[in-house]
Each structure stands twice: as C-alpha cells, then as structure tokens.
Image (cartoon, rainbow, N blue to C red; front, side, top):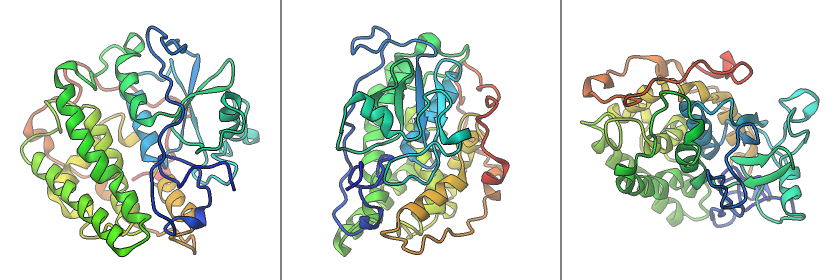
Length: 348
C-alpha cells in the first residue's frame, strides 16, 4: 500500500493508480482542516511570507487556489510551489525544481510535509496544500475552505484593486450555486470516470450533463454565475470546464457533447480564460499528462492524446455584450510573476 488516498480525486496520490475504475469511487475528505485566519484562532495567523501554497497545475481543486491567489494579488504574501504532474506512490514530487527539491521547503515529496504534521498519516497526500515554512509542517489540505479564506481572512494582504470574490451580500446564492456545481459537475465527472458499473456511470453521466444544461441556461443572459462580477462560483465552474474537452469528454467518458458544442458555455469559458488570472494559470500539458498517464486503471497504455486544438481558447467570445464588470470597482491582476509562467508550449 502506498501513502495515498482512495483515488487521484482532490489531488490525492492514488493508493494504486491501476485500481482506478475497479472499485467504487468515493472522494476522500480533507483530513487537515485547520484554517489560516486573521485572528489565528486555529493557531495559524495570516502572515506574509510564512506559508507556501503547493499545487499541481493538473488538479482542478488546486487550480482554484492558483486562480484565487492571482486575482487577489497574494503572490508576494503566499509563495507558490508547483509539483510534477506525474506523481508516484511516494506522493507529489518536486521534480520540476533544481535538484528535485522544493527550493523553499527543501523537500523532495509533499508527503514529507504531511509527515512533519502527523507521522505515519495513512490518508491521501493531496493538493492544494498549505505548508508552514518555518516548521515545514502541513497546515491544511481543505480545498473547499482554502479559497474562501483567501478571499476573506487574507483581505488585509490583498492587492489594491482586488475583486471581492465572496461578497457577503451574495454568499447564500453563491453557496447554493457552488453546491450544485460541485455535486453534479466538479465531482460528477470523477464519478463517471471512475465508475465500476454501467448503472453507476450512467447516473453520474446524467448528473454531469443535467448540471451543464442548467448552468448554460443560467448564463444565457448573464455574464457571470452570481451578480455582475467574477466570484468564487465562477472559479469553481471554470476549473472543470477548462478540462472538459481535453480530458473529461474522452478519458472520463463524459461524451454526450463537447464544451465547444455549447455556444453559451464555450463563450463563457473563453471569456474567463482570457481574463487575467484565469488562463495564465492553466497548463494543458500538465492536465493531459496527469490524467492520461497517472490513471492507468482506466488508460492502461498511458498514451496521451495529441488534441484537442487549443487555438479556439483565444478567439473572440463577445460576452462583454452582456455587461458585467469582471473585477467590480477593482482592476485586473498584474503580470504573472517571474518563474510562475506557464510554458509557451503548454498553452494556446
């Protein structure tokens, strides 16, 4: 047995990648749910430079955190570590860095930060993960709460002009929209892809496309999911949509239709992709290699498809005709920090 969770789900290292699709899919909960807050109630106060965000650009849950960090301008306050998209039984690897070690944490595998927090922890080594730099200990892997806290508890460190991604007046509606998207779409594609029976697969498949139809209808006459600006709900929908044609349509058998075949969702996704803070965090090479080469239980040849053609992501979307203000009264984020750019060959 490896050090991993039940599947490569919320960025977990797989207990056995060959077992995917051979046992019932169940998303593991975040075991380390401490919060980094302005008042430090959990013992982890917000402090600039103290913490390091570890992500895989392949993982949709980690990509939420990467987008939020960019939009809010937290790059100087919260450093970023990017793992190799191909993890092994020892967990996510820092093989993209010189010497195969994270230059800040000094570790070769993310499990080392988990071990520093809880020795012989038996669960999944997942991303996103936030690590306390001074101690080298994992703080949290709670992917659902992390971005909400970046939007609220970290507000004292936001850049000037940062958007309000979780406005208090809209939180009930945002939470309701996100709940349906998570249940049927964010998680639904995994339930379809890792299904172990025809009935299980068809139920998940039905949920995925029912939810896609609902959000498509919602977005016909409105630019964003809730209100007139980008919110956390848009981030959570985008990270699934941007992966849909590249991996979920074929690899996870969610093949009723492609994203590019829904005029509303395709335009919406392109609008966000072309918004600073979204597309500049997306690495299609990492996405495809991770899903097709790690999930050998459902793709035993580990062959990575050459397509789809990415050029369409940069074509006009015309969603600005619906009004809305992406950043509200704020401004777009600045340039991507040096060293954090997605390589040219990994994007349109």
